[in-house]
Image 1 (cartoon, rainbow, N blue to C red):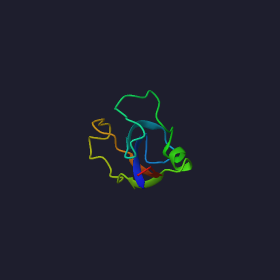
Image 2: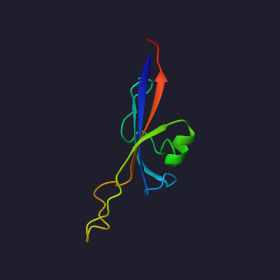
Image 3: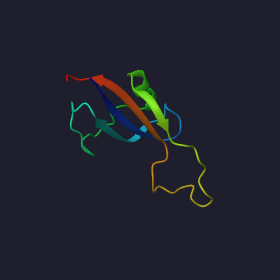
Length: 91
């Protein structure tokens, strides 16, 4: 039986080799229970490192320009990349 693991990386800019600035991990296989803030270091330093480790990229945020006057707004993390891994689990 297969289950999905999801990795969300927020990068410093739109390039996959940009540094990871925030992340979330969701383990549908139930192998690890994760909570926000439970790690000091990201699971991967870049999105490219996740790809090289076998994670599949399935979504990246649209690259929309900031509205005039909002170029330095830090209210959200703009460069969000979603990855998945399918893992086998015992049924």
